[in-house]
Amino acid sequence: MKKVLVVDDEKLIVKGIKFSLEQDDMQVDTAYDGEEALNKAKENKYDIILLDIMLPVYTGLEVCQMIREFSDVPIIMLTAKGEDMDKILGLEYGADDYITKPFNILEVKARIKAILRRNSKNDPSQKSQDNVIETKGLRIECDSRRVYIDGKEVNLTAKEFDLVLLLVSNPNKVYSRDELLKKVWGASYPGDARTVDVHVRRLREKIETTPAEPKYIHTKWGVGYFFQG
Image (tube, rainbow, N blue to C red; front, side, top):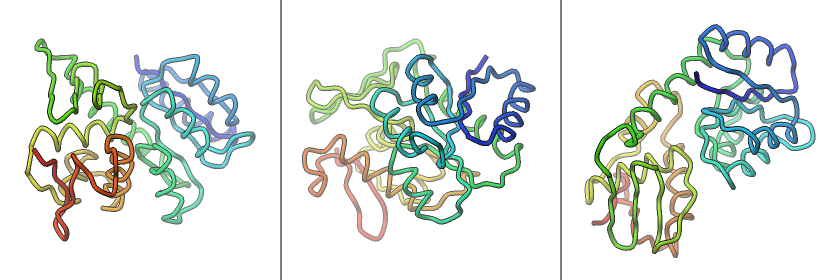
C-alpha cells in the first residue's frame, strides 16, 4: 500500500483528495500548514507528497526546500497560481512535478501513479545484480539510488537521480531537452523544456565543483546536454 501525504490549508480539497486516493487503496495522511507537514515528513516515510504552495506557518516552497535536506521523496506542488514563475520556483526548490488549481482529481491520480510507476521501474533494487557505475570520481549506486562525489554522498531528488543516471549510462550521447523530458518525466508530462534546464542547473550545483565549468554534465549549445565520458 502506497503512503501519501496531502498538504493544503483548504480542508475540503484535502478531504476530496484523501477520499479519492483511498479508493485506490492508498494510505493517506493529511496536514493543513507547513509546520505540520514538515513534522510528518520527518516522522514518516511517504511514497509521495502533494504540497500546496500557499500554506500558513511555512509556505509550500519552504517546506519543499526543508524536506529536500533529508529526503528525496517525490513531491508534487499544488498551486492556485498559473504563472510560469511559480512552477519554475517549485522545481528550483526540489519539486518533481506541479499541478495548477483548479484541477481534476483524475489528473492528480494519474500524475501520482505515473511518478510511482517510474520510481518503481527505475529502482534497480528490484534487480538481482549489484548495479554500480563509477567514473571520474562519480559513483552511482543504482540499487540504493545513491550518488557519491569523491566518496561524499550528495542528496539528489528522484528526478535529479533519474537524469544523471540516464546521462552517465550513455556517455557522450547528446540528448535534446525534449528527449530528456520524455525519457525522465514521461511522454504525457505537460511541462516544457525549462523543466529540464532547471533540473540540470540544480544537478550541477550538487555534483560539480564549479557549476559554470562542468566536469560531468555538459551543454551542446543549440542541441542539449550530455555526460562527457
